[in-house]
Length: 152
Image (tube, rainbow, N blue to C red; front, side, top):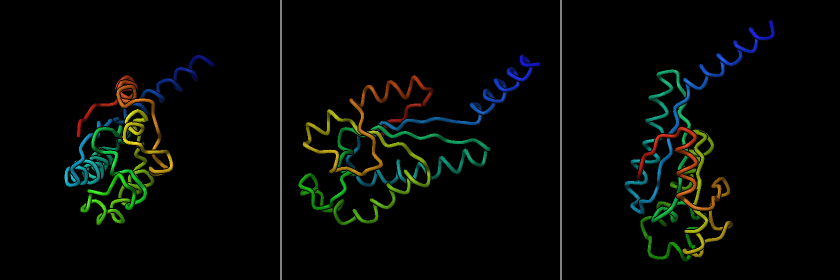
């Protein structure tokens, strides 16, 4: 009897995994329009698509390259001095990014090595962003966990 129950539990766990689709976005773009269209709008479209198929979309975003600036809390931070368009859009953009984390359960992972090069500190970035050792390690780990790789 225990064997049958254990087998049923394992089968139900396997079926649950079939209903989860995973994607990791390799976010390097510094272009605001690409960021908004491909990531912020794109995630909402992708989530809706998979929900329509009765599947869950698990999303992770590894942040490095030119994308650090989108995750800086303070629009007056020196890192954004030359980013007039981003500073003007900051209030709306910060709400949209936070919504991705809260509403869509997107995991944002930022490269510590790049933060150091750009002289960004933990307190400079949004609290919901997890700091990882390097972007490469983050991407390797996510792909080995079964996440599909999408560069932006």
